[in-house]
Image (cartoon, rainbow, N blue to C red):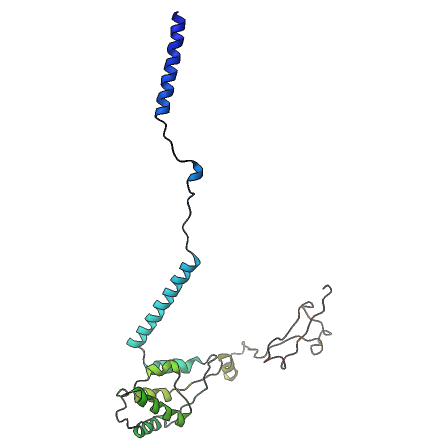
Length: 227
């Protein structure tokens, strides 16, 4: 009987311990219900918006710099020194450019050369008269900078050079150890016969696709040993 009672006591203790263990168990959501952690990244749209905001900020800073420091003379000087693929015609100012501009101002009843134009109509008529004299007009990008006759004088006294920088080197005395090849050199088996019409790149073709250079340079299609 003692053995039976001890066995029953052990079973009761086990049941009580199981009940205690069950009571302290906490139930959580299953793993398939928990959403995985998603790394936050920058989308292409957000990147483009940030780039556009940066460009607008830089443009506003340049405008403020122009309003505070730059003048028509400095802008004209920058135009004169550029000359790379400019879409405008070249201009060489005459010696009496100031006198001609002042005469045009008198004919349009503008006495003070430093005073701002009274209206846009007066400004338009004056610039049209100057164009008839010089055959050189103010670009649209600079019309807002021309506010008086003095600005027009500074504009027509500034030369505009549209010569490419590479072409200007043709008239410059270069050092003896420097040589510039201004024309393209293209291989053609009928004209380049130094090595029997053979090229160092026998499988490379020299095809001229531009309409401007098709008549100037001959193209050559290399033969292929396989299609």
